[in-house]
Amino acid sequence: MFAILHTKYKLKPQLAKGSAPQQEQNDSSISVPLNVDRIRCCSTIITNLLCTVTTRPVQVPSGLLIKYAIALVGASPDGQVEGFVDPVTRAMEISVVPSLWKYGCEIITTLAENIPHCLEPALSQLYTVLAHRLEQSLTQEQRASVLETLQQLLQASSFIDSVILPNRIMRAVLPSLTIVLSSSNAVDASAEDSKSNKGKKKAKNYTGDEVFKVSRDVICPTETDAKVLLSALQVVKYCLQNPNLSSSQSSLASRILLSIQLSLSQLSPSVLSPDPQVFCQVQQTVLAICTGMASTSTISLQRALPLLFNESLKTGDTELQSAFDLLIHPRLPPIVRPIPLTQSLTLFRVEESEEEAVARKLLRLEFGDESLPIPNPREQDTIMEDAVPPAPVPRVQQNGGGEAFRLPFLSNQPAVPQQPQPQPTVQSAAPKIWQNEQQQKQDFTPTVTQAAISPSEKQKLNSGQPRNNAAASSSSFLIPQSNSDAEDQDEEIPTIDMASDSEEEGDDE
Image (tube, rainbow, N blue to C red):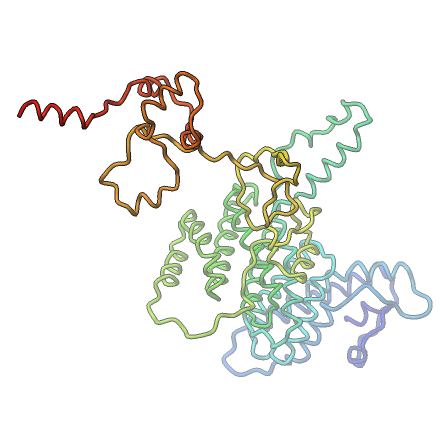
């Protein structure tokens, strides 16, 4: 029947060997739908037989069934036989290709649910054909069937030891998750349109209602969209558990999941889907995946656990709270293992690698300042500066016409004028007798006391007569004083005449 529906294609040798029934010479508009209905009935019979409970062992041709399912899922509208091709028949055969994908996915899902141990030899082929199908442009119904099949296959069987397939599947599934994140492309496009219409009339800029639109559209308006989102989350969960997943894909998936968790806390359930249960299912699934991701390494646990724990308190999920309790307070000693270097989580753009940046741009996840150059982390050090910058100081030259004074370590900077040093002060009394000699030696400022000036010198000063050199040299250290100091200087210091005292003592005798 499959060969009948592909009369205008080149079939593989293993598919052409079988004895296909003779095609009836009827109109293609009748024969093609009839054969499609036969394949549908055949797929339904196979799924029902595999789900039947029997009390005795039954032989199942698993190899032929797997080959048949792979042929259905791998059917492609590309390629044609040489020679004349009827365009009507060609168009009819192309139109039934999505139906073949659906029936093939149903058979693979039934095989994974009932006889998963029989799929081990063909897991590589099954994962390859499903990943290739996800990489193509599909409708939501087609993508939902492929994702559900891949989810059931990952859940029932073990992931093969391959480096290419996990990264390929993760790369094909991540676009189904980015619809939850708000994109700035639409805002930028509307801004560009408004800028281009500056020359037109102002009334034309407000002709549409989209200018006054402040709410987002429903992310998952139909039940099929919700199935695609939930199935994609489950596939990402199983891919993150694969040790062969590259560090760039793991880090990118972790960042997207954390962003979705933050976005869900700011969205109302009606914005995500008309069905309120979809919001709870998506939120619990994302939080469970992030919790499992955080427990894989100490680096991810240190960065993501506070955020996840805060979000779990808002949801009130008791199962997740008990899981956090066991994670923070384990009942058993931790497993002795080295910290995996590939599980480091990058939360900033400066930390992501080139491979991760390319993968992020392919998903159209860009920052608002993507056009700006990425700053160097070494240039982002904080430099301590004054709050008010000092005013520029002019150059000061010496009186002798020499060059301006320059500091030795700032040869190219303008010279700073030397601050005037404080002039020596004049003490009103002699040095204290209790001051020790060591402290007197440390006092560098020269002092001149009034007691050192004799009364005769004071009279000469008041009369304007010149003094001797000693007095002139001592007066060079004097500074202007206040009025109170001038009054103190006018008062004469009493002197004691030793001769008069001796004469008075003689008279008393």
